Length: 228
Image (cartoon, rainbow, N blue to C red):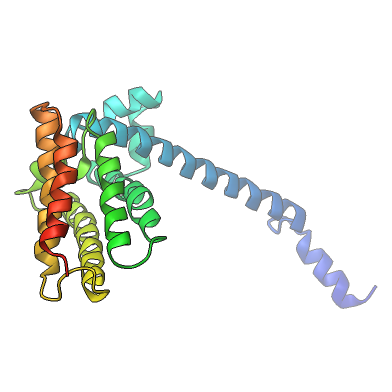
């Protein structure tokens, strides 16, 4: 054995210089802890989202959440650092699910009216599933419309991203010749968004039958009015 190889072997086995095997085991343990922490945080956010759908973002309580998760308050708090961060995490998770269930399926459709119709149909389906619980975007707008801060900013960013996606779909339908050349995509999106809002009001608050059918008819009326 050469002097250099003896030196390397000596350094690797010195106290304070863990062996490659020990170092790998330590790294694996850290990775498992990290994954477990991420899984726990995801589970907390999921529980918080279900809670917020019933009581709103402002109704979220670290204590109630800790009880639901069978964790200590400090254990729940440690994953977020603040109540604002918990609320923001809920907003982001809600938007991620909204995007997955509404936006992504529509992207498989052809540009123009097929994609626009798909966006509205999936939006309606997503909304109808929430009539017994509640929409984070709608309840959040009521809770934070006049309260500046990071939670309001997160809500605005999420809703704005969705409205911009709808505007692009309307503009594409116009560019494809499916809608009239002179339409204003923001106006059409405004009217479509209005259907969803009034659907929530009529079906969830007033409990009026036929609200879903009226919303669908309203969408057909908007398309007919703006046809090429």
